[in-house]
Image 1: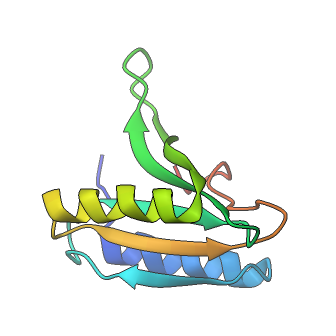
Image 2 (image 1 turned 135 degrees about the horizontal axis):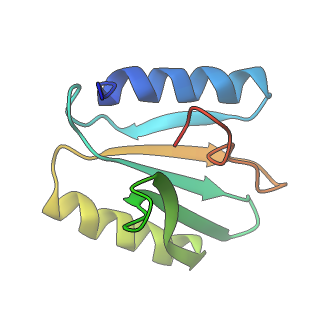
Length: 109
């Protein structure tokens, strides 16, 4: 199965968020072709959650798993460590008081 480039996926994700009136922006621009993507959800109350893409080993399906959650500064530290390991990493920050991130929608897995 053909995979989308990281840049294409990020642009499509940002467009879908814009259509839902959910503010989001690129914090770190990774490798255009094969960079991994982290999505930070900032609920604007001092709390945050960061998602990374994973695989279900049984079904082989892609899914989004919580890498870290808690205080925003703690989540930012986790992201900084991940960027230290992977300089090609994309980081997208989504800001929504309701906690919407749309990652569970079809086509975003």
